[in-house]
Image (tube, rainbow, N blue to C red; front, side, top):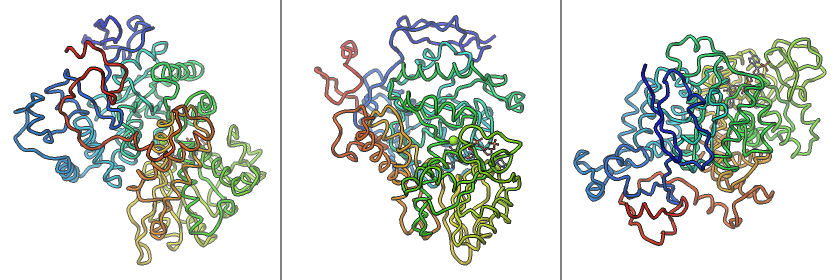
Length: 622
Ligand SMILES: NC(=O)C1=CN([C@@H]2O[C@H](COP(=O)(O)OP(=O)(O)OC[C@H]3O[C@@H](n4cnc5c(N)ncnc54)[C@H](OP(=O)(O)O)[C@@H]3O)[C@@H](O)[C@H]2O)C=CC1
Ligand SMILES: CC(=O)C(=O)O
Ligand SMILES: [Mg+2]
């Protein structure tokens, strides 16, 4: 049998061999560590986040390490000093020329999955080039690294898996999660996106194949908010899967059993949270992503006041939807509280949105109950009506249940409630039928229709169908992008109501301020920041959101808002409070451009800009 060798970081640095038959190290081979992590650490420039290369990373590492690699952009001097002269062709190419080549290369692929694989390969090869490419062409690249293509990549994960990216923590690691975290080779992690793969987009339980999601979300942390990539850690918690097709699929790479649930699972998540804090500190941002509904709300309630955490599907989605609604006021002339809302779906996204809409209505002067009265939800068992015979009304659903007859036909509910805002967050692709859309058009001058489910195949309707069935009068947004729509001689560019407008900026503000907790108000602040970025020109084209290319500006604005709020409320832990918040936030941004690769001349005493603790004199002698 093949043996897998695992280097256990620790004082002894001993090499231990374990059986490859187990997907995770067995307990007996994972020594409990008490010493601080001895995982290899890199030094980063305080401002740019660039790696400061000590002399030991000379030569070929500069071509092999994606953080150091600049491809043909290494100058002659750099090639000679680093000892890589002759290892590349003679040509020099700056980053702009390389970007052009990337664009040409990617356009040659017909299949989106191949484009995705090209980008994965680029990230593995040349990190700065990868991030600059995405950040400079968000409109073209986001649909590849993110929804919808990332959904396909998750579905094909076993087939396309090449090199590891992110950390896989399995239920077999219980009792040893901290030790597994120590194997991650970065010591300065500030943000984690974690999923257990149970509800990947609208595609259901994809188990360990869900890794594509944290990887994609964190790529956007860097591309859209300039958070340095070494500060980002994607994690999949693998407790098995209930997806029988995957369990029978020979290509499946996760644990091959049903999901561990109940107390065992909860204890495991508790241990995970504690291990993260022990390894990376109390301020480490933990973004919960694509957990199953039954766990998502529980964990948010359980951890929100004791950890620096938020649930993107509940809170990030709420924020982006409210941003669109705030912007819609400029089109409809109506306050948010003057609308009647109907949701298809009453899960994480829908309830999250409903709760934040209530907060926005309260700001407009309504009581909480008055706000809830304006919101109707419909789940798989029908309208949330008190006393309905089937379908649980537990948890947050109960707040929105109405004294109303039982109704199971959504089209009939649309006619009964006559909503001015229709929001789909059900993963029921095509559920907004022409009949439903026409009713929206009949009952409203400017009906607001959000088909938020992802990926594209799960959208409740297409953009084209929304315009076609409302005589072009609707204000439409979708979770995944749709191409421009032609209607009545006009071209509409509907916006993408996706939490990607929100989570990168929230994360940037939280990280920069060392905020301990993330109150709900921050998501309202973020919503307003995005709405403020919507130009009249965007509204005229039919979009309630700024163009995707402007998300980077939104992220900065959100981060500034979060920073102000964090200091006002005593949540920040970074002192002194910066006077110029925007300037302060900008000092945290990743530099997408190549830096000189010439080795730093090491001096004693240490130079001020060198971070990562005191310099070890033994390194100086090397
Ligand atoms: N645009 C964006 O930024 C985001 C989009 N989403 C998308 O929203 C969708 C839902 O996600 P999420 O809320 O987290 O998932 P949940 O599983 O938490 O909720 C799904 C909800 O839809 C209901 N539902 C399912 N099928 C039907 C149906 N045929 N008719 C009526 N109701 C139905 C479920 O009913 P029941 O409660 O009875 O099970 C449940 O209330 C996904 O496609 C996801 O990708 C999610 C987050 C962000
Ligand atoms: C966008 C997102 O977070 C989702 O669809 O789950
Ligand atoms: Mg999600």
